[in-house]
Image (cartoon, rainbow, N blue to C red; front, side):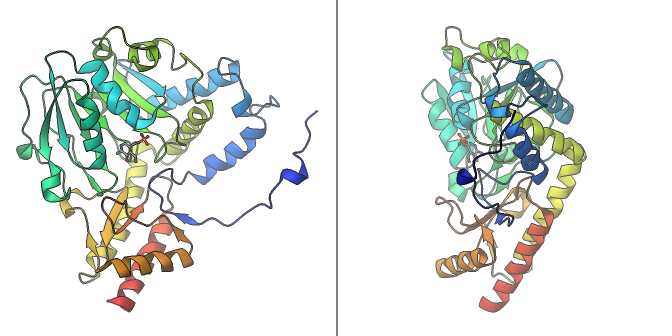
Length: 374
Ligand SMILES: Cc1ncc(COP(=O)(O)O)c(C=O)c1O
């Protein structure tokens, strides 16, 4: 017989929700959180919560199989690819990719488009030669390279790019053009728009922005490329071993995988990637319109031709006004709008789960703030 949780440990239920513009961990879909609330207590009528089930039992078998199947359905991922649920965040991938694939005598191309791309470069240098194919720091990272701006190496082991630069709010409209295997850090925009999987060799994303809680990383990797990985690596750093073990070579982040699976179902309900893209484009346009129609009061960090639809980075005319903006936004129940310390200013992260009405609310607040302080 199940018993209710002890009343002494129960906090009063909080019904209010703040508009959460955090860059990550970030807002999750309400429907997912409500389902998770129920499944935390008991899932599939078992009387055992999702976090309490064995990672080798039938309930978790179903959870992980459905998560993979829904992921494949969402992005049209063929059997040529493995779908893996790993740990260590996107940062682990910064090291794991070159550790596996930047082998003796090879060079890898890395366009540097911001803080995260730079960190990936730093890790890759631990294992081999890196060609910085574009140096965005020379332009304060205000844009991603056109194909003409890329200086690529001959016969690169792979090209690694960051499709959406969370801090500066830039994104590639289309992947860079290269003959080398294409590797993508899509952490801050994964499944926010259709993605051409077949153009890529490996795509990865830490979950905590668009896919679920922190602690799980989605990796989609082409099997023939995976087989070329370096031999003799530790189990947890070898893609082949994760693929062979069905992402269960050890105890995986079961709750994170469960939430990711729920997010995939929610995305399918939104009309899949085409559907969520239409919503995301609309959401971002409210904020970019507020910037562009402010008579120069707000300045966007990203060049207009490569503006991110997920992270809108901007500034008011002064640090003092940025601070006032944050204070007044907080008083209006809007949180997480401070820019990253490397870019300064302000940033609104409006991932898939962020509500469209919340974007309109911020846009109206921005217009009003500019009127009062311009
Ligand atoms: C584009 C991008 N890549 C990588 C990371 C690092 O992710 P993690 O904390 O999962 O290692 C982040 C984190 O914000 C990011 O935005």
